[in-house]
Image: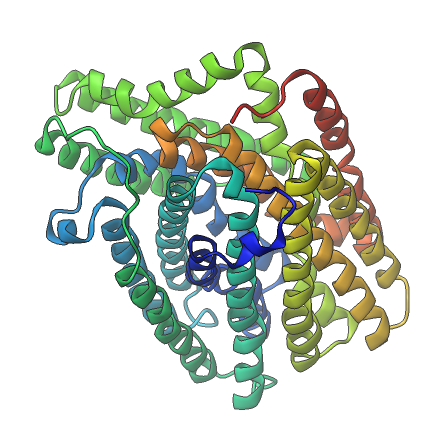
Length: 490
């Protein structure tokens, strides 16, 4: 295949990713951006709204259950094949989670909304695990640029529906005066649209990947139960350890939050070790599921493995940390919900799709590392435009300029990064390794983003956006160095 041919984007195997991308992208803004508007209208304060971004830890922790997606077979859906059965299961659970969220009211019980949103994020992350694995297994590395671009196009179209579509619907139903029934209709409608993903799954072809037969089905079931118990325990322990510092002591509060997460990880590690010691499941099973994929990656990249993982963990930090407060910023700047829906969620999505195609084509034409560098540079630089908007008049033309530039850069960086991660992944551990990479990609940014509301309270929007731009500088240096010493090994 000529790498420079544009026609590759229209091949059947590439076009399939458009619909999978739609299914993957629909829940994401309902967990983050659209939810922040709902919470803001319900009277929830800014710092609490940004803390809801921690529901995104489901995406950051998905490595914990990604081995189950690789190894555990869903018996009652086995006729669909391994990947398709998991995909259908996760999509059905997303629908149930959206309906459950629609029935909650954060104004009267914010904890119940938090629980349903967390389940939505968990099943959405599970769907992402399966789709990422399917994409990598369905075509060779040379196709990953076009596949990633088409996936992002579908993903962003879904974000158009989940972002602009949901806000338009809320505005039409009357969002200025808070009514729970408005958001119930919005989230229920989004649940109905998930059937697009279900129909797509039913017509997909299972990847022709030879899998090792399961050694002991009972072992997989027991391991699944332990992981579920460990995740519930993590959430319980984290909720019970209160942070003693106030919002004004943000640095101390941030350090204590790190300590709290480490303690919770230690506690669930003790739980897993306990079940191993009582022989509830074998130690060899844990090694095979969790350690073998990591060992495989370390053997392939040797002394550069840690540096690559650091790059993965920091690559999206500038735009993720900034993005959590974007909708709140628009509202407090004076733009109404309809304007946000039109310019941020509608035109912004098309700008992101354009950026995604540019990123995929740039990777195809000039190589992965060059595309990765350009993506990181423009993604961080675009945050400075938000700083300019923060000190400028609230003009629609200014808003359109900033949103267009930001979304093109975000789409470009996203496509380049997906291509890079795909090249790092071994087909022996497709879902597990890719989930590890994407978990690292989100963990640090999402953790820091949870405090973005408090940051803004202290230093203001303009300074906050400048600081987030500076967060991208170490990433650029790391890309330059790794591009010279540790190129991607396909």
